[in-house]
Image (cartoon, rainbow, N blue to C red):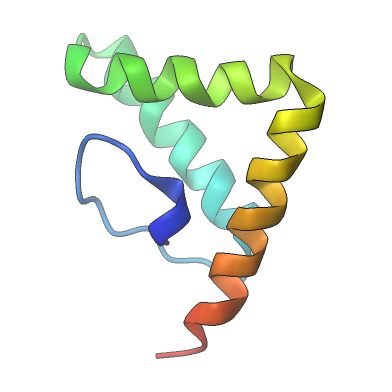
Length: 73
């Protein structure tokens, strides 16, 4: 999903933007826990979105819009 962003090109597939966001969060947690410093800034950005509800919701709305625009493969 293009809106997810991050330091790698791991393909994430799901039926909804919410599912993709959860997969991305799990991937970032796992990568950082495994010592991957390249993923740390993306993990911190994800955590920061939820600490700032107004800007976080704007990101969330954009992610949902971008997911909807992808259509099905």
